[in-house]
Image (cartoon, rainbow, N blue to C red; front, side):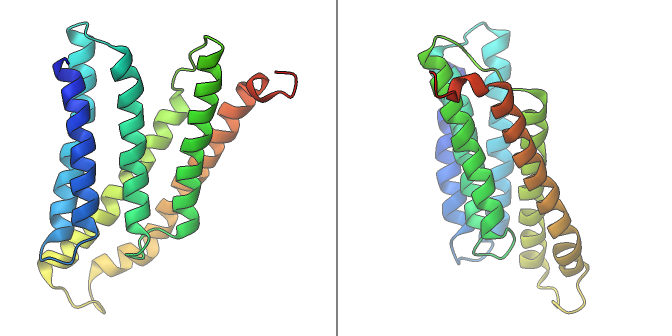
Length: 192
């Protein structure tokens, strides 16, 4: 197994640790979750860079890298629901979109085709990451500062900017899913 694939697998382990930290009640758990999420995100950049630079792109990496990314984002969105950061419907939209696109890619693969990532899908992912980091950062600030909830600026950010960020992210998530599905509609044609 090459280093790029090992780093991809380390992101899966980091995702499990991240979800555990975010769902625990120990002191500074939210801050630890933020740091772990940032490190996991960095590994996503590093494994791809290593694979491209050294020409060690493998079928394992092609499969596992996007799969681990989806697991990481699903874990983050689902874990933020009980913390009242992300509404359940928004987390459901994010996870459902990933299932839909993965299903389309599997159908294409069965026909010997590869459906590459599109620019809108990458923008959607960027907004998802921004949304997760936004809420994790606010949770960390609240945890570290022991701020008075009535007067803290982060509460306003949470209640005013947070919902806007969630709506933008979900809108892009749904829009990218609809566009991707429409462009590849022959895969789900009843004639197939």
